[in-house]
Length: 467
Image (cartoon, rainbow, N blue to C red):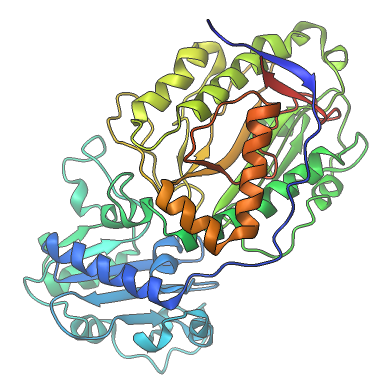
């Protein structure tokens, strides 16, 4: 018999905040580089190049712990030789390379063309010289990773589409031959087989750490926002602490809220209008959307069935998303769980209902129509189902992160990160006992909002629950 969602009074517990910050050990980075080299050789590459810049840093940071902050960087792995990995950085990246736990394993090369314009350019060796030292040469197959790979839906030759700067692609092709420089992002980012699709226990702990802060920031807004505040004043409630962002801060009301990804402004918030807010940090994003009201009576007359028409079926879909989450489940199973309930045109759900999350907000997604890709232990996933009604009903939104962990991984997490494990167990209890959502043992909720969805932002203690 179908279960339905209802709006009820709920007390959202205080799940606590971290007092211990997890880190990624040097040996984990070494293991990642070793595994990438092994996978690269299996794919018949001789050299592997990983590009990064301020926005597209995740593959490089995953492998080295170093992220470009103002500049670009390039990691070169000679898969056929015994050379140390080469990390090319600009002027301002040179000192910051000390952030990498494996700096001594790398050969650092100053390449000042990565630096900001106007800075010195007189201490760099030619690009071609460095590439040759890394093993790039005639007939050598070079795998290139930036931040995307492509499919036959986009090109007849997706393997030669590169999203790195042209001057780097040109230099590699000039040395190795155009046909030998190939997009190899899939080795890192494929939704099933990519190295970054499955996380070590330390990485999961870092993701939970970030999720605590991203979700607490959004929680602070939900429980503190008020009509008359400017959007900037509402955003101050987030109490951001300097952890690195994975995307811009979102917060907007009224017509600006319908833009979705809008940054806060000096516009004043008004009672009864649409409202949205989100915070994304490395490893976690939390979002909520609804109306800046206390009840349906404060909404325009034509949409006072907002909860019944939109929010209740949406929450039922989200509950089923959680309940179908399991190791071995196919992407189609999760896709169907959502679209069987809110697949009608009114709801306007167009993007994948969920995706892998990591240092970047969206790595890839195994969840799509017909997907036979299976979810695996160690995956970190974002519940990310966004109705785009295009009507006065606006939207409702609940974005939080979880992980899937088999018994061995759960035992390791509990032993190595007991404080975080206690938060996870408290969230599981709230989701199951208070929200009526049944969770498989392998589902680890990371958000301090824990699937709590208040349709009316000015009444954050009234939220959706499955009967």
